[in-house]
Image (cartoon, rainbow, N blue to C red):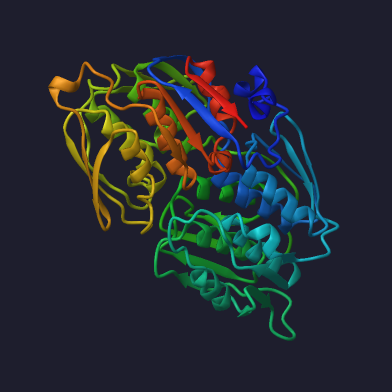
Length: 454
């Protein structure tokens, strides 16, 4: 019970002293069947915090980030930049202070990069500020190919010389050059981390950079707003075409990380499945239009309120299953596919889910089947046979031991366990800790019977 004991009740309010130190063997024990009631805090977005930690490398002045989530990936990124000579202090209230004036080693070694694909985000800032960078090819969740070739091609268009040797991207400016050059970059696909890398690199480049086919996620907007606070000149962020006028230097700033829309979406699906009435404090309904539309069609009440988002649901067996197709923002997010699939398993009717972003993102299906779900997959398509009217009065799933295979898969198993009859044990929850800040404590705070076990 070491993990559970390390958490205080305050964790649900973002003030825990709980830092992840390698609970690789931890599990979650869930006793299902409880409805959820009350208020839960939505933490800062992992997918905004990680690039913003890298953006702090662009200046020698201090940067303060507020609302940084307490996640394993954040801890890894802080270790990575400290390894470069950066001073980084992390407070329990989610404040991180970074001083990159002493950065002396523009390298990201494999030992630190292998567990987190977002480490590729160090490439652009290091190259822009120091004219050189050595970054290991990244690792992370095994959900499919996320090639770095778009990053390499884009930075090469800005004048960088990049080679891949022995598992490392080695980048430098050409002889005699002191800055990257502004350029027009059109990626072959919409890439979130690619857009972020180019935004950061272009902020210090000479001349204008235009990003075509840019990602439009709220986290992109949040990063751009941080860079603007540092003195960058950026227009069009949040659209598919972003213009950046490079400046010679950037200053420090204080910036609050935007709320995590995927964490909010996960709690929306959890309450929808279990039934109940919960307010997601700081949640942004305008960042979840595609998910909320599907929830409303399923029979869930969701509304934006002053505190965030309020969700009310009659629970499993009383909802209508919804088909959907994942696509780039503002479409239905791939990061919500597994969680909504778990909801479909306990809704009435048959639904079809098509995954278009990652080729291996149905690994949670076999584990959901262990809990009693009826799902068939064929390539990128999954067909979920939900409940008939006769089954609506019985527990739709039964507890079992299941294993998390990636970050969002682990969240789907937690949702299924909250509904399932009996006890569910979710193993390998280090995946969950990579992207959810104190999830079990937050769920306990709104009525779930859930605990961490070693």
